[in-house]
Image (cartoon, rainbow over all chains, first blue to last red; front, top):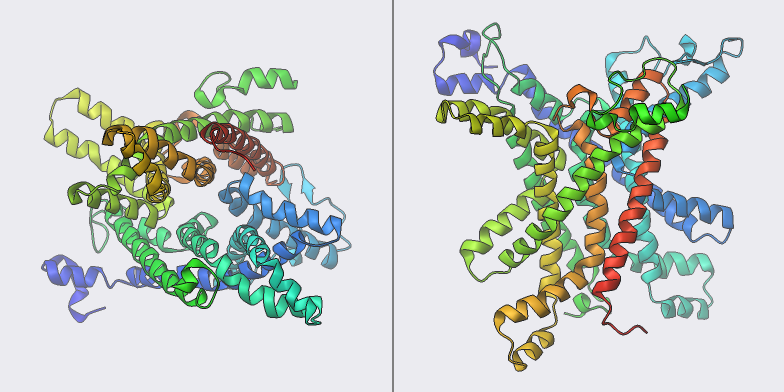
Length: 287
Length: 266
């Protein structure tokens, strides 16, 4: 990075550190913090979509649809999220390749599951084998993001389902009495008022989501945990910047990052809560 | 090999009893169900011990956080903030790295004392190290729940106790403590379920599984790797977790009933 970094062995402590902390790999480490935010930005809209779909299915009047809603929203209560994170990307990957295989290689005669192997034709590989490294990485990231969205969507669906039912029934009846259609009652009365009831649950969920982001590492994404392990590991004298096992130090940096993120989120949600509850006929709204 | 044979061979494999080598070829559904179930012993062990010890630590910590002495209150609040504000996954790494470094320190500081080195070595094993992390984590989360409940114990109840001439100690023991538990219990049930699910993370906590004595997820991912088929082992482990979650809900429901037995029902 700096001009004087050509011979790290000759450097004194301050300049050694300023060189060490600006190596290419460290720059990648700093960039990988944005992967955490990217995941949050990608998943939050998806989570809300899944959540509304789940909540609406659960209060559907058609019985099979309601069952789907109930199963979807209650599955996360019984099964650890980590198992979904492991299962969904592989299942999705194999599912997509299977469908592409059916569509593109209809002349293929061998079976796909050959005992212990999952074999599809070359053209059905996803992403195509010849594509660049970054496409593979992005594809992996989106599979991971999708898995996160499914799990947290189910959590959020529970919250939103509860919040939709917490809007006082008299208000909905008033809407109908004014001649609004079902749709209008939902869009103009139930939906806007739901947020104040949903917010405590959703803010809680946000905290859980933030704390689940290091699990990206398990899905093969090169995130902050990956770099912390890489950079912190013992570097022998063969390396330009030899050092002992510094993983503990790197993980403490991650810990501080997450503590900061939690603290900022908490302040933000406190602010938001006082904002949405303004004018509501609740204890916090009247004060 | 029939299924009964598999059960006797691998039923207690996760704690080192039975056949040594894991099935490598011709893995059938029975192998998977038995071995993953065997791994569940560890998940239940982690959850049960962490929850029982964590319960007592958490209720004390809740009182500490509510204390008027800042010397007691501030450390309790800081501990709760750190454990609740950071991911369990990172906590596992930090604690593991610390424990790995410990023997070096221990060796230098207490040269020749065998007890110290033995103790620090055990800390890097999952049965103690990972358990310690889960215990600290659930203590912090539960303490926050109990603290919230403690703050909402009705003042009238406490005043009634004073009017009856109970000492502060008696009020704490007979009025505040049971009311706190009663108010916190439904949230605490959720925390117990979350903790139980968090035991699945032990597999990734970098605490190694010795001699392939792993938890349920260890065997599930072993089978998923060996068979390239995630559609069998993961639903099996999911089924086990659902079963044990229902078990937690039933037990905590019974306790809840006992805590609420004096409340008149509408």
